[in-house]
Amino acid sequence: MKALRTTGNVFIFLGLSILFFVLYELVGTSLVTKARQHDLQADFQAELESPSPLNPAFTGKLPIAGNTRSAVRALARIKIPKIGVNAIVVEGVTLERLAYGPGHYPQTKLFGEKGVTGVAGHRTGWGAPFFNLDRLGRGDVVIVETTAATYTYKVTDTIVVSPSHSEVLDGNPKSKAVQQLVLTTCTPKFTARNRLIVFTDLVKTVPRAVKK
Amino acid sequence: MSILPKRRWQRVTIYLLLTLGYAAVLWFYLFPYLDKTFINRPAL
Image (cartoon, rainbow over all chains, first blue to last red; front, side, top):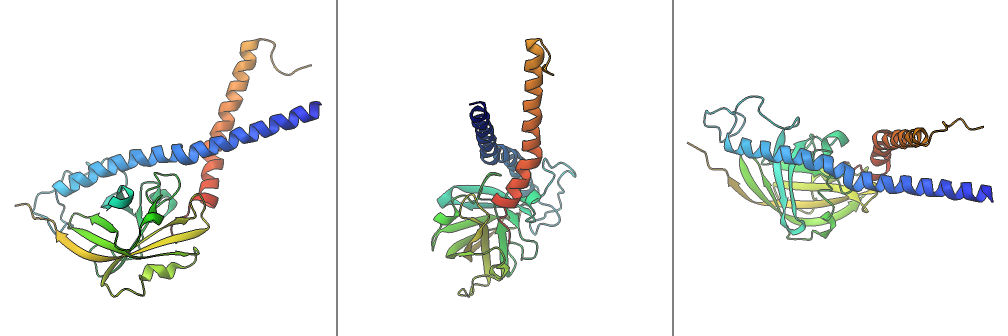
């Protein structure tokens, strides 16, 4: 009887530990990323309003040095209206960087450059910016704002590959677009088994107005 | 013979500290490892 009670207590203990992990994964990590994204959004907005020498829209007015709130620089803002994404993209796709938000693959082109731009984002925890990426279909819009321009992409294809298929970062082989954006995330949800790949083509570029 | 103190508040404090310590180990060491190993690797 005592052994049965001990076994029961062990199972309750393990069950509570698993529930605690679910809490960590779905709430704890996302709170961290939410706070970081808040700072990144503020930094990005400040950068849009005071162009730096690295920005083609630079007018000679420098922003105050070291006045950023985030330790990581905001690279761009990605918006996917259909699935309610509005997140700041940072440079790099290490897990440390992706804990800030979607990350730009360093080996791919930057937004606005000819070629393929790649962005990875979490699907579980850490704000899960790409949680509903599987809902995107052909023709859906992805908007990327940088300090130089606003780029509008349209989804051309969605595929699932194993994690070793890094050639997807070469772009959609069926597409002839000069500039493409490839979004990657984990699939199925709550696992890292495969990668969901969304190919998009650049359809419109609107340069930011130069402030005089 | 129990190694736990006789006073109730002392026993409660020990249980509380053990629980917090266990939770901290899970939260800061085990869970991040599980997260990056099994749940989250969205990059290629």
